[in-house]
Image (tube, rainbow over all chains, first blue to last red; front, side, top):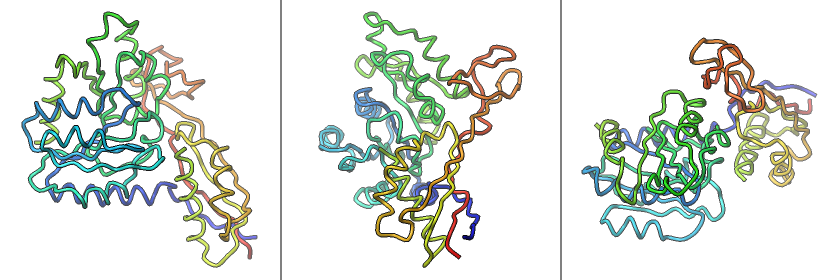
Length: 213
Length: 111
């Protein structure tokens, strides 16, 4: 028996493809943003509101296990969109993005939103070629999420806490939530918003504009 | 669920590193925070490696505990049961120094 030393990152193939994607986006002058959250936290709502408020040309990749509901909603805004159906896979990977982007016109776009599959575990492991990773959490999910899913929250460039309008009727300790995020990710900005009422979205939009400039 | 994709990568890397040889063993290093479940990889491996030169290879996992450096007092400590509070100063939060590893260290092949 012979031992061969390898020391190779298991996700190397994906990481390489993500690097290629990043080059492609940089070349097109597009900033890609990977939006991750559990199902129902408000990823699509955040993208829709952001399209209205950002004032920059955007394109969108929608990732879901099945259905085209989200792409239809985004398409209604007259924004270039492509839907990826993973057919069961719990996350998007760099190769899926590569394929999807070929079907999408990035010309003139400044920001590309990639809505990942609703899941707080697996998407954290797979780079897509993004410039920023945004994790959306929502008040009804509970303030313990950063403590339960440290992998996801520690990988975030920024965190959006959505559905702040439900705070009066839900036991949610904003301080405990923020403490949990900053425990695993000291520098991450946290935007407290409601996509329904529009509350708090201005600082999120300002952050995005800075990122895209 | 993402262990299937992970396992596919493990088998691909092993096969590419030792072309035309029977792979007898694979040593995988996983950090505590890598989010990869050993049992699921073992389960997927039998399916993914079937009909390849890695079929039946013994999987060895080396776990790396998570070490965090306190962002306030710089004390470095081992994460215990997901508790991110610094045992020295009580501050909650730190920078991960190790524990995100996810790589193949070596493979064993027939001579």
